[in-house]
Length: 82
Image (cartoon, rainbow, N blue to C red; front, side, top):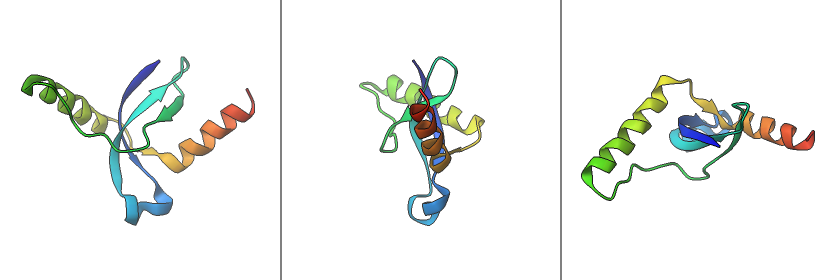
């Protein structure tokens, strides 16, 4: 399974939740399979690991923000027709 960090948002609750960075996991076809419930925070056991994690999070801005309301719908749809 492949994962990366993505900027996410929920348009229906944007004023409350805003934009956040989460880990997003994809299936073998590149479709979103699931994502972390809570936003991600950079972490490292040493300074260099923290820097690498932060850099990986910065790459999330290279893609369009992920609409979690829409992704929830698509995930349910895929599960329903498996």
